[in-house]
Image 1 (tube, helix red, strand yellow):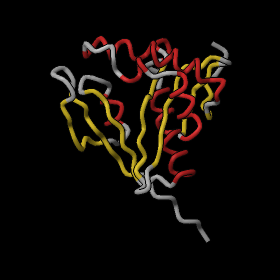
Image 2: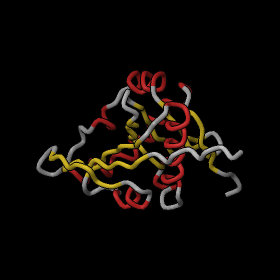
Image 3: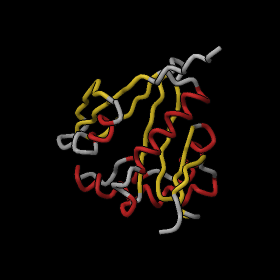
Image 4: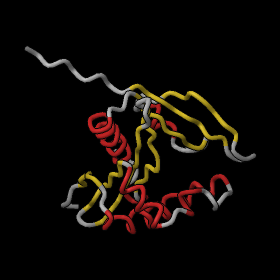
Length: 164
């Protein structure tokens, strides 16, 4: 391929590409649960731009193309909420989702003092990735007859003490 994927902070210039990729990626999720009104498919550009201002939004780029994204925020108790982890279908199964998740965890811990990470996913979604990366289910909520939302958490790694 010749180019490598880089991960960095999203800017307003990325918003339209993120939204288009999000729409593409969540089609399978909507079909899986029979619900095309899920938030990722109805989010507006204005809503995404507001999140770019106040949250931590990262993108994976292949050249100039946005091929992945993830978002996170941290509350006053130090719990980071991570969401909207997306990877372009042609880039899936190459570790990019794991790289994005690790990058947002690192950034939320370093810049916003996250003590734990929390994310939610549909019960038929890719929970294996999250389990493999140390997340454990802490709650399940029935949203519709077809959808149970599984909340998963893991503690943030403790910073290493500086050696003297």
